[in-house]
Length: 342
Image (cartoon, rainbow, N blue to C red):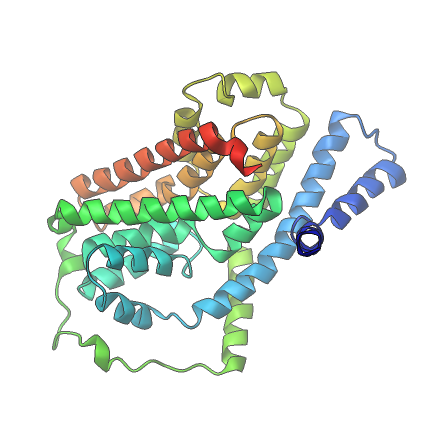
């Protein structure tokens, strides 16, 4: 009974099967488009995904922002300053899941952490996990695929963040951070125990969450529309045989190709999910699809350009190399064992 109830809630609240039925009815029965035509497949995919994503996005950003309101940069620094070793990287990666939704907005916080004297490896664990994993991405992944895939994605994203940050610490890459970032702040050294946490009222947290919904939706709506549009074209018009040739299981380089294709793009996970959904429906392996998503969100070209302004080339190359290799390994593992998640 519990499984049945959970399945029903998942279908109605996350997958929104009721919305899919309405969209199909409108374009099939009301508009009169042939349900077997390519136009029908493309247009129903587009409208169903756009409406679903914006509904979920608004609700999830509100919830994630409400949680995030308890983790100001000062409080995050205070938490991280009390943990040492690999556990510090783990905490840094976990805190990255309740902070900004794209890598570019994570970089200013990364600079603040480094200036405050936190270990460089810990700050990189935060920087890697922040765009990769958050509450909204997990639930949106579950809405498109299933909870097993969503949770596995979270575990892998956190592993890449922890391993990446740990390796950067082991190789003592602090010397490759630009001097203006590592320069000591004027005055006495910061005592994190003396930081007084600014308390927000419930009303202020709600207002902050609503403002975050407006701000983030304003920033990402165009990427969502572009992503859904590309997904609709892939789903409705690009032959499955062509996609399988390039990104299918028979191509041993599919994961590498997907990763390299994702790096030059600039989007967040909300814009890449519709593309991922369309690729899976066309027979592309789940590992190849997740590799593409991770490359777009963690290694987008604009974020790398921004990061280049605060770290030297050796550290930047190590960061990109670790994350790229981690994503590729993850992709092949998911392709090999992905059947276990369906």
